[in-house]
Length: 311
Image (cartoon, rainbow, N blue to C red; front, side, top):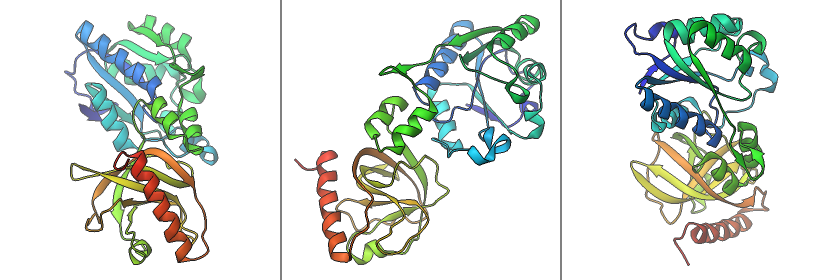
């Protein structure tokens, strides 16, 4: 997959395209429906498939007080879009200049002049241009003017609800990992570098891998989860802990992982992925090491059963 960070980088001889545009924060089932249609149109009509997205959520510039952490980070998003089969990804820098483009200017500069779009696919609630002035009807009209076709892809409904990034975030915020997996069409992951921590877990017999706080992948509600750790093309059964580790010392919120029945792994400075399988229990503060160790052992027994490594 070709990647660009500005329209000017698109090669002059790049072929005509079918394009979809969106934040793709989560690449959930709704986004996947757009991507599947994109690839299908591309293959049927012999034109290149291009995804246009942004380097950050528009609210980061326009409404910074309300911006939410992303479900998937930029590297995760790029990987998922590549896996969906897109030929190219254009990630626009969402700055003041882009925010002030009129709907017509956005279409002409990005879709027409840079990408030579013949077909554009969007969701029903698609908005574009300064202050979201452009909607689907405006895009259709601009398509007539500039010679591209517009298709609106219907939302995906699961259990009577429209799949959206907001819905995915809500289910993760209540620890409903099974529902998040269903909405995403895959297990949710947090990916990042393992860094040195306080090494408290090691002193009580449960060494943990602490993930850097700039990791990608939304952290679900504080608590303990059964999951998997992926490193060096290996998968390890793991107990995941999300929270602030109040028993010993309040630290900024993070995720740490204990690989079950292994104390010999050196994961420092490696990029690993942590995959959530099932919520085990809420976060708790314990009265001393003995109570904590007893609870960790109970957690590990539950994780073994959930992950199928113990009957």
